[in-house]
Structures are given as structure tokens and as C-alpha cells.
Length: 259
Image (cartoon, rainbow, N blue to C red; front, side):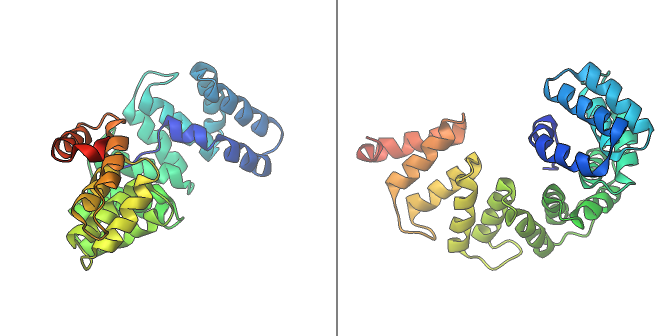
């Protein structure tokens, strides 16, 4: 799984971003960025694209990043992943971490550019050096599977830990799985439970399923079939068929638990 910042994530960053803009820019540039952000939030992508393009051509890294995203997703412009790479590269070369991360993913997936794991690792590393959580997660994946870098599961654990400590649910889930399986780290079922719990508490369905299994069999935690039921139910409510299957089996064998 290579993580890229999508439109939903970018909208969540909007309030913080506008505050930063106040200190970064002034006058016409600030007004243009604010107008573009308001239009983007309203999903008026045509207006947002016009404003971002003016500022992107002036070298504003944030505008270059958003313009790249609009090309990637085909919002306000015809979808064009090559153009997305062009604009992400411009912003990434100015040191914008989220652009570096997204550019790394474009290289990693071979979207808009020839697939190149080494370039992906290069850009992820630049973003990770700025403590960008998605880049930590992506480097964990690259080291875990040896894509663009020599496979090193211990290094994967280190990068997943960085992301997990920044409350990334997927990283917490992956770290739990690595502790559970003893992959790149000494097997520790209690630590597995601890990390699965953190991810499960954020609503991460796969973590809820795995944690439910640990409660069901008493692995790393006292056996508690009712807790397993509650966790699987949460995952099933998200449409996860594996959780529903686990529920069906549990309830057929222990119907009182499910009442």
C-alpha cells in the first residue's frame, strides 16, 4: 500500500493551511490562495484551478501541489497524470513534504512517469526527513517488501513505528501484525494487542478483526469472546465480509455471547 494525499485529506488540512498562508504571503498572493482554497472546499474546481494556476506559474509551491492533485484526480481539468507529476515535481523541488510524498507514490505506482522504486524511496525519504507521517508509512512498505531498496524488515518496523507514534491507524495495524508474527522484531503478542487496539479505536476494520481473534483465543490478552464479538461487529458494520464470517461462526458455536 503506497499512500498518497487525496482530496479528503487536503480538505482536512485547509484551516491550518490558511493560517500558514497568512504568515507566508501577503496582498494579492494571499488573496488568490484564499480564493482558491474557498473554491476548492466548495468543490468549485474550475475556479480553484484558475486561481491555483496563476499562483503555480509564479512559483508558489502550495499552488503547484494542488494543481498537481487536480490533474491527478481530473478535477477542474482533464485527468492527466503526466501533468500531475510535472506540478508535484515543481513543488517537491521547493521542499514541500506532501508534494514529495505524492511524487514518490507516482514513481512507486508508475503513474504519469516510468515506475521507479529508487526514485520513490528518494522522494519518500525527503518527506520523511521533514517528519511527514505518510512518508514514514510508505518507507515502511518499501523496506518491508524490498521495493526500490534492499529488503530490511527491521527498517520497516522502524518506519512503521514512526508513523504509528503519530497515530496513523494503518501503521499501527501493520506494527501489530509484525509483533504478532515476529516479523523484523521479537514476537510479542501483548505488543500486538496494544497496537491493534490503538488502530481499532480509530475504527480501522482490519485491526478490529485481528484484535477480535486475539480476544477470541486469548492470545496476548485474557480470552474474552464477548469482546471479540463486539470488535467483529464493529468491523462488520463497515461492510467487512471477513468480520461477518467470524461473527457467524462465533454465534453458531456460542449463541449466548451474541445476545
